[in-house]
Image 1 (tube, rainbow, N blue to C red):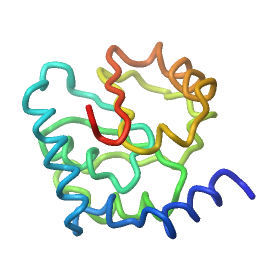
Image 2 (tube, helix red, strand yellow):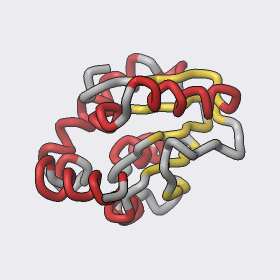
Image 3 (cartoon, rainbow, N blue to C red):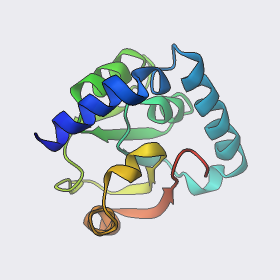
Image 4 (cartoon, rainbow, N blue to C red):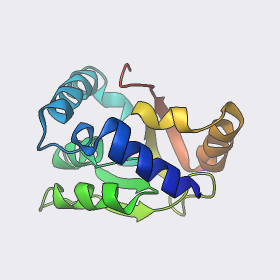
Length: 149
């Protein structure tokens, strides 16, 4: 079973997409927590933001609505479909399907965010590899597990 198949099965059966789609209450709660963090730390975000394991685009779309240029990366088509469906019309993020273990950004970013449960899908070695792959392309990292920033 591929990494993508394992993730799809987990999100479809265990966690559910409602955590990642702004149309659901659980996602709204997660976003409220992020909004609080964002409002207190705007200076760290810069203009161009890379959202690793962006899922349903909850945070990517929030940041795009506030004028940031956002690129979201995720391995699951189903998550990227949610992200695109909920994107702001006037400044939609760019969404890329990629395996983070192989992803190396072509452009530079002010800030890279890696938030939520996605971190738990990677071993410490793989997590370090992901960060090493992007370190020369970003000024700041904001990393958090389970949305406790």
